Amino acid sequence: MNAEPFSSLDAEPEHSQATETVAGYLAAISIFASLVALAWHPIRLLGPSMLLALVSAGMVGRGRQLQLAAVLIAAVCFFLAMMITVITGRPLW
Image 1 (cartoon, one colour):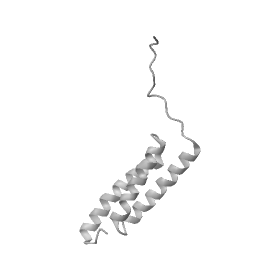
Image 2 (spheres, one colour):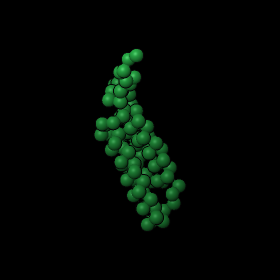
Image 3 (tube, one colour):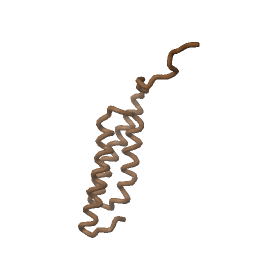
Image 4 (cartoon, helix red, strand yellow):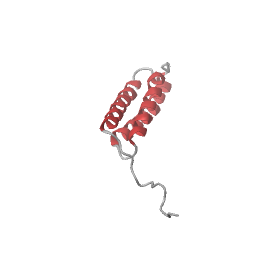
């Protein structure tokens, strides 16, 4: 019997250049949609924007600043959009 571990958690998965490019575009679209949601129909845009940010972050894993920024911007924009909507009395849809 061999006493070596079957797998290692230290190994980072290999991502192709195409995967990183697509994840970058998804993160950029998410950031744009999150910022537009502050001015126009927050619920219509923030749901898909958050989903895009999380998918792009899941595609490349850890250590990517653009995907982290997309997730954080989507979360902050959700909070700000809900505050703006309540204060101004605008409709969510």
